[in-house]
Image (cartoon, rainbow, N blue to C red; front, side, top):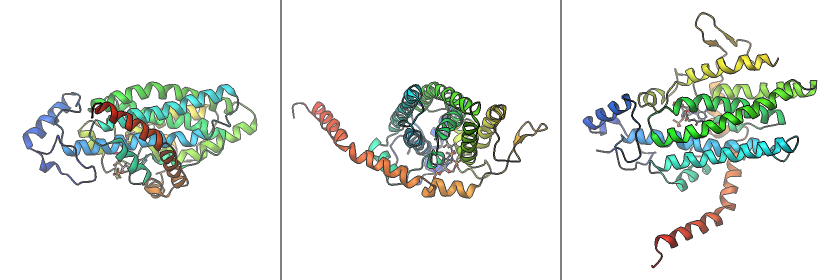
Length: 327
Ligand code: COA
């Protein structure tokens, strides 16, 4: 029986290693819609998959604060600066929630951080592109957060209790971010011709990474089938991409903006959106460390880790004191 021991997420596990009765009872709990909690029995594969996914999600939140963070000092006006600062702070808070959820599965925060800064762990493709203008930060806040909500709202109804609870809380904050981003995009799209041009160019830049954001198409996705059986993922990558297109393309077009895909249109027969297949080679390059900003993003994280080490050490030594006060 493997299930309840912490497993090294890099080790190979298969379901054949599990006790069949335990595995069947676990699947029944999932099928009944029960939540799995940290001390419950779970297959090693379920634990490993959750650690992988939640950890990547947590990394995405802290790395995700970097492209927008560069605009805090240059935001147009005090109110926008305040709002952006609050948003960036929220994103870092999301990472804290998600690291805590991943820790319940047995992997330490130090190990996760180490895997991020050494380039071993992945994080979302989308944060490896530069936010060149203020309009980029507006498009990120509106559409990246909209994409994140599509994903997180669905998965908050999933099977692992701590992850679902973290996602619920994150979704409340992301909904506010989305409104903030939408307000900024509307302001630019209804502004001067220079502002319209700026937001159109930002839209053109962010569209391909947004299409990648939901993950590879279902035909080539590796984990979807297993994760959906275990209700970790509540919809496939293509289903989430379609939901995003359905909700946001009409809103983008309503603003008089265009999208850089001549094939993009709703197919009235199928009810689904037709689009040009995203460039999956570029996606693979970016998620494997070779995007326009991967090196810069990790260098900033490494620097933050180095500079903050004395704080972490101070907290740790205080904790040790409390654990062994009379030693
Ligand atoms: N950015 C970076 N990597 C991605 C990705 C993306 N947008 N989409 C997929 N991948 C990676 C997967 O992590 C996986 O790599 P791995 O096996 O080395 O871990 C590989 O591409 C194959 O993809 P797939 O089998 O479809 O992965 P998945 O079933 O885990 O689905 C997500 C990908 C992003 C939909 C899923 O992991 C998810 O919902 N994650 C939580 C939400 C999240 O991380 N959001 C990020 C920003 S807010």
